[in-house]
Length: 54
Image 1 (spheres, rainbow, N blue to C red):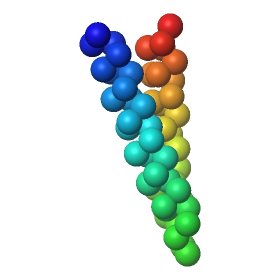
Image 2: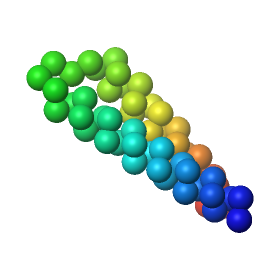
Image 3: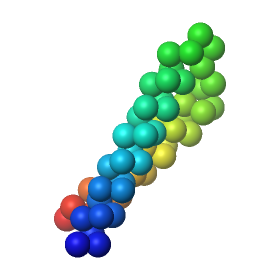
């Protein structure tokens, strides 16, 4: 049960980061440092999700 809650929290966080990433990329002058940070966080969460589902 706790594992399912953790996976759901990770999925929610992944979706939030995706939203922020899309918004930043749509700006006329995106902050590429921020875009890079968001992509790294998103990848880290994706890796955590893969480990949690094994």
